Length: 298
Length: 217
Image 1: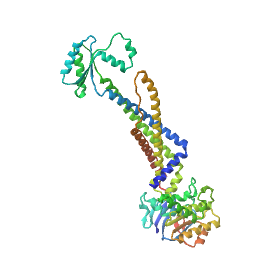
Image 2: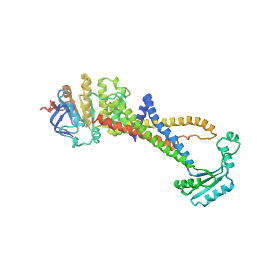
Image 3: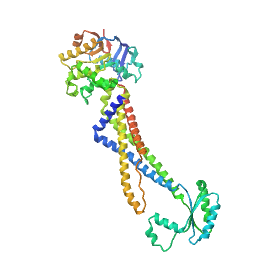
Image 4: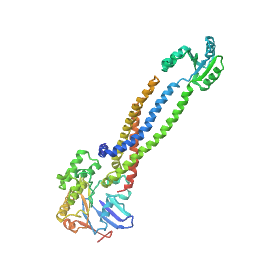
């Protein structure tokens, strides 16, 4: 423990002793980390948004504009008698119009319309949300009298979700590559340090230093540098989200909606810091193990 | 006890530094290794501290064969020695006190105890007033004494000394040699490699003379 304390002080001292070099290394690490982390935050936000939308896949059955209440009752009868339908809801055309007016911020446009362009509609869900049942219902309902149009609502959301999964995989690959870059940066920093401290290492080994004793300050240095890089990346991501949210607010206002990206959650940030520290340690370990062997048996 | 049995050392280039050397140094003994430069004196000391390994024959320290030592055990062997290097090997990025502190930190002494021992060692070589000085500002003789303080700070059982009087004027050299006699008198095994005849005259100790890698009669 005492040795670790001393090694930690030694490493921190060396980080501070050459502020410019340390700053640049930390910056490189921060950039390498903030890129995948930022993309990850954006993607998971989008993904949770689409999950929410596609949570209950439903079939919307729009009646023809000239359908009357008897036609609607006939459709309702068919829906009620289908054992695979778990529930349905009738949305009268007047109600649909007022919903639209309230939600989408299109009241100006709607006010200019001479008549309600929306049809009556049923929204149905099926037991188990099985795609084949949903598709069967969509195809059946399209053939019913006075049904204008049938739509499987969750489809676009499912497609977007699949696309986002693809994006997530891409981010993971990017993350892995940049993690390797972090290890490489640390490896190189430590290599230079070992070269400048070669004499000290040789003398220490001559008077009885073990390899762990020699290694320790370098491992702490790599860990601290990684940790500093992780902290900086956290800051970069937080700043980027703040700036993006400012623009998003403007965009959202145009749609009378309110969406903003949440920042990095605390557990996510803790993971980021732990990850960057471990990668820094790994780079230092690889470097010090390799280069100590070169200094060899003195 | 240090024991060499038919030890030869051949370096990578083919140069044979030691040939069939057998000797025994008892605990608490004061021994001089003499000979011209290149006679193998430094190599002999390096073999004792496992800085080099014998090409053939066996080097035993307290009955332990160094050829059979694992790399992880070597540091602990070296802590039984204090080594006074010919070129001092001081670290110039830290002051005198920190240089002397290094072996104590390596051996795991806690901060206060280590500082006390380092000061005691500096006091013994008469440099207590210079503990804050940078080694580069010291004279050759003073640097030599810092090196001695570093070698004895952790109170090793054996002191290995390589050419202690190299570049020193006569009075200073006598002074240094008296220090080694003092360590010997408190029970430390002292092995001094030197080409300087006056050291032998001053100490009148057992002398092993090396010539071209062999022990001369």
